[in-house]
Length: 122
Ligand code: HEC
Image (cartoon, rainbow, N blue to C red; front, side):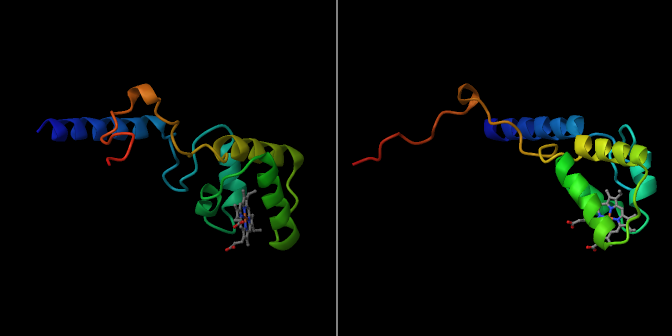
């Protein structure tokens, strides 16, 4: 019974932490609503779904490379410098490699006791 109660509490905490962590997203495109998100919606969902954008993570360099690749091979027009800077700022801040990463490790002090002895029994 005690185990079930602690399991329910753990699940609730994880659930609430997940909700608290998730940034608001635009319902239609799934883009995180943050500075310049509309610029990205207006320039980056014309040829493909925004899902292709939101599924990707990258540093400023990765995002710049992706845009250059689309310009070189996929028919993306040269963007005006201000628009491109806003798009890159948005992508590199909201879709960074670690923005949806794993949580930090639990400190040893908060870990449950080991259920087995350190040494194998003889
Ligand atoms: C002129 C059309 C066009 C526009 C506009 C466009 N893309 Fe693309 N993009 C493509 C094509 C074509 C692909 C390849 C689709 C596929 O593989 O199915 C692609 C693929 C991608 C990918 C996947 C790359 C990979 O490695 O798989 C990402 C991420 C991406 N686009 C982001 C963007 C962003 C950000 C913008 C806004 C600056 C944008 N796209 C605007 C045509 C476009």
